[in-house]
Length: 71
Length: 238
Image (cartoon, rainbow over all chains, first blue to last red; front, side):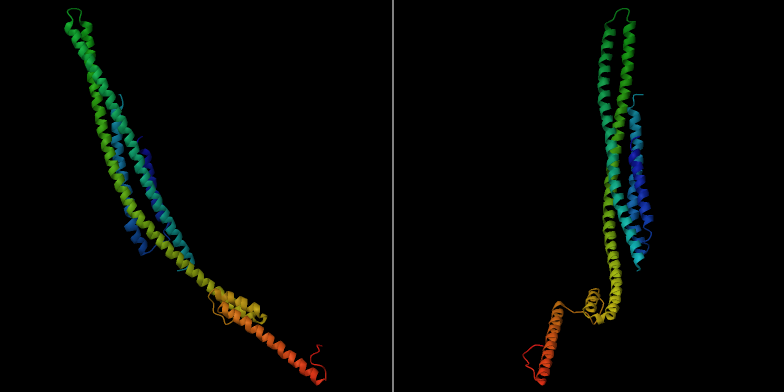
């Protein structure tokens, strides 16, 4: 189905970012917490907003494809 | 900070940096792929509108012809009436299909527009934050590496001190002791045996040669005085 691949890939990218953040827990001080708040969280949020738009777009495209079928 | 902690944090920074860079690439690729798929569906919708519009025009011509034929009929017009009804139904369906395709074009155009805006926004946010994040992580990694090198050099200085002790132990071996001490000094250890510079090393060698020449001269003079006292010719070598 249209956009299944990109939605899956974006989910995977968000998981990988989360995993990289977990794997790097050896760096754990005030600077790290600021880095997480200033950089990692906005990065993840940008991805989540894109994921939300992808889901809405997928719904519209699915409806469009149904309208185009000859039935 | 201990060496192992420096190493762990360095690894953590590398992991994060790789993760951030990969994430920014994935977001870019996902957005591009999604827009491409939406664009494909939009093109299909536009093609469908063209086909169905063409089909509707054909139906309308056939309907027009059926109406004309029926109007001209005087008797046994049942067939023509049925033909007219069929043409009318075909046109109704064709028009319905065209409207659906036009609705599909509208929906795919909206999806494309929303995806384009979201992709641009996501890329801008990801570019900004991942670029700053990557630079910050690289800078921190560099500082950690320097800290680790400093720890390493501190370790080498410790090794240099070991060499100082070694030089003192082998000092009776003369040149051997100085060679070891020079190596220790190169590692930052302080030793009284080490040469301070090439000039000083040369001067030391030259003064040693002069000393040795002086020794030989003294030996020669002593030998000569000894022969003189024994009544021998001082010029003759023994």
